[in-house]
Length: 352
Image (cartoon, rainbow, N blue to C red; front, top):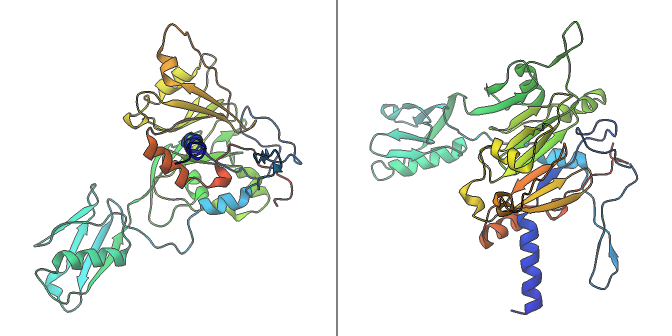
């Protein structure tokens, strides 16, 4: 392989492995995450340049479009999950009727067929899996799976709400429904419930979407009540709180409040440290969405007492610990949209 091509590929992979999905905030210049700076509405995203030095402006993602991509489709078919109660019916074979609960491991057990994995399957896919498991013992079976009780749609609401914790939904959960059920934060001497200015939705260990909730509601935008996915975590920050987001290969990703003594090492310790998938020598990325900059810190330098390294953090920054290895770098390169590989602040002009 050409040496120049190989070097370029290696640099691209390393940059991709350290990038973070930073999705757009709703257009409201007066309502930005704590500690971030006001964006110039006319500012453009940083431009790249070709090897010849000719400017090559990059397209900017539309914040509202990024929110729509984050939201599941309204007609998205339900997929079974742990705790769901189902009925398995077979046409013309009432003797095989079965009622089961999907176990925590995602499986059910049927006579003869034994264990069958159903978690993550649609009802029609589950029926095919059951038919396949029983095919050696019965011919021409036609199974039908019905969900009699939905318990897998669980989301977590944390932060400045009256009743933080996990919540179960029979149907597709929505943002306002989850926040309202958690108990809106109160303010003023009369302790009246208040719609939060903003909230964060964490999905998995590598996605976070900031939603300027009050601005959406005031403008009548239906995305204020966007649909959620199971296991989403909604974080409602205290208006006076200072915090950072920790994503990637850590034990407990999410929001971490900052104190006057917070450093990178103390924040990583508060989330349980890094996982084995980060490898022995990870390079931690600290992304500042407000300024569009990234700092890279070697984890080994934090552990080296001779370097006496204390990395201070700013509110609103995102700390990302990537997976290790060439294959993991390739994974991130393929997974991340090229338009979101750079941590950038989206221009608010002309969005609404």
